[in-house]
Length: 455
Image 1 (cartoon, rainbow, N blue to C red):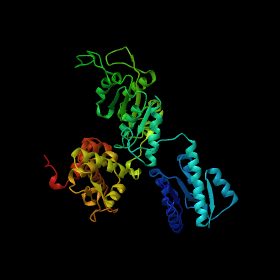
Image 2: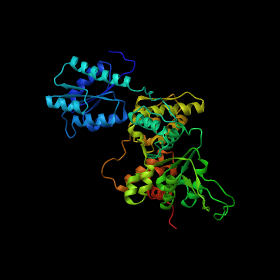
Image 3: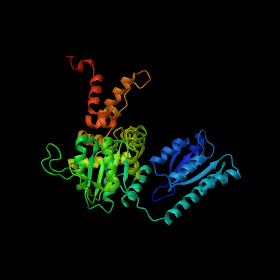
Image 4: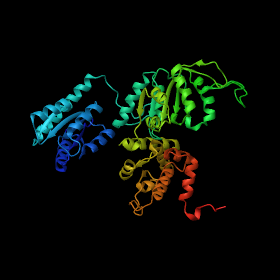
């Protein structure tokens, strides 16, 4: 086997299972790390969660063909080469493939030597291109609290680096628990304002009647209880960065005021008619589709476009491939160190379960699960039976289509609640409902023996 300092990875895409098997065997024997996909949709999913140096794709496949995959790779993955193989060779096909972006074009049937030579030529071109570009540091295990080696996270880290070098407004989107505040902190501490304050504000956690005073401050006597003047978060962040988390939760009137701050770079304290200039960089985040809210009239279009200068969309954990295992080991190391005990290892079966679990609570849920495992597991190895029940297989679980909608909803609510250790506030955030609604759903789904008596 050819020895390499680091295995180069190849993704082979073909709707023929025998062809996939032969190519995987031959390329693995040459020392490459090989992924396989039977169609373009599966290939795109693999590319999103794994680092791939070379894609080898068949030309003719059902539904979506190889030419579309070549174009997708060229327009979305600048650090990946593409090679086309086909059983229907033609001059026109070869020309189109090369024009679309394929570096090599190989007609079936081909020998092992021809395949090896074509792969080496494509990878050599990749190495030459990499040498000609400014050297990029390999994604470290941790950067400003962000961790990940998947292609999806590499793109996020590159976007964070570019955003940090500017003073533009950044809108960070993603499901709850994906790390939006970590990204905001990485942008702030990676930029020229790093020595100035970083002020996070949870817009959804402050009652609307108090949010204006909290953000902009108030003067003495502005309202009942205002016994002294008080600066707001924008004043505190002057010279630095303010992070408006869950900006979608602000009211229409507050959106107007935020728009004015973005336009004029000045704030007016509650009870005062004199605006004050502030030098604040604004980062915002949301776990909702702001454009959809704009379409419904629930969010101001002009504010959306003011916020949407640079957009960073965080992937859910379930789409980050081996990052799940990287993060699990990181959290296990951290919590074991806090307890002064050896770091436990995950068995291969446990790692497979972690990787295949859906993670509705994303990275925050994974951290909670690993913390609980480190605390509760006595052995040096974490096995599948040590994992939370909702992550383990059960032969008694009804997964067919004979359940009512209420049963399915009750099971999902229960699973989400268990995933966050019973924290109803977090569970409500993940489910997109308030705590009162969550309490009502839990009451209705409880067994009759546990129902409170009717008054």
